[in-house]
Length: 431
Image (cartoon, rainbow, N blue to C red; front, side, top):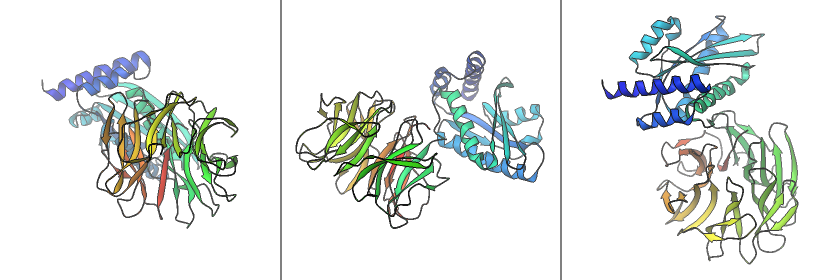
């Protein structure tokens, strides 16, 4: 028996056992897959147009393309496709996919009713046993077909790994294509670009509120750098902090009860703890320093931030009550640190030689890892909610654009071709 056969048997056993006993995958499934040194292999069949309508056939192709792209971008799977497999009976399908050496088969159907209503059914089979291990049904309006595909991908990722997928996440950023810096939001895969502000003013440094469709950012709408909060679902916004002087940037705590912001209040920009509605609770840093770019640890008990108290901007950590201050061991000028969702890493920007690049600080190992090099300025890193990807801005194309890469710096892809220059991405942490 060759190695591939052994891997296939191991996978099949784990897949069927954990899905049948628990109804969802446990971490053991992912660990078993990882121990073989390979990704899971999924066969993606065409989606069957239930009523044979032209609109269903066209949407089936588009839907499959979105789901295939999601599965590939997740980097959990190797994806095999077939263009006519839905015409086969199930026994023929299993034989067909066995020859493609896949472990799992994903099939589905699409039905359109009342012109705008879409129903997607999906089934997952284990190839080795030919057993159905999971099925689901999703309904929405036809125009939201991409969201349904993202939802199915995230369900599959969770069943394989026990962790949330990121296909339904969004990225907020600033763009200057209107000659003003305005706030935009886009899906994680570069689709559904949406302009949020139309102020003809300067807007900067957006940050998502955890597990919320709200974004907090700094705006010069009232000719002062104030903090604003916008809800992209309700299309409502409000001023959060309009204290004279600098109000920027901010980080909202995991429980959404407090936030840390840089306020100048007529003196040096220091860090302050604010309530969710912008009331100053206490001052966290003191002195003639510039303290900025705070980011909460996932525990909510610590923050990482930038300070020039050493004579040039460096990365510091302190407890949320302002004590236990310590500096990370870095060399160049640093900026925009962001704490990983799992709490074991901090990603940040550091200028080495002539350019800014993205670096990773591994806290348990006290080790710095360089993620970008020799490709323009790379700045403003932001984590995906699963801690496996990083969004950042880069000038590698000649202008500032948003890119995404893996935790180790691999698999760099441009988010989308957007007119103008784009800056300071922030990846939503659950919506």
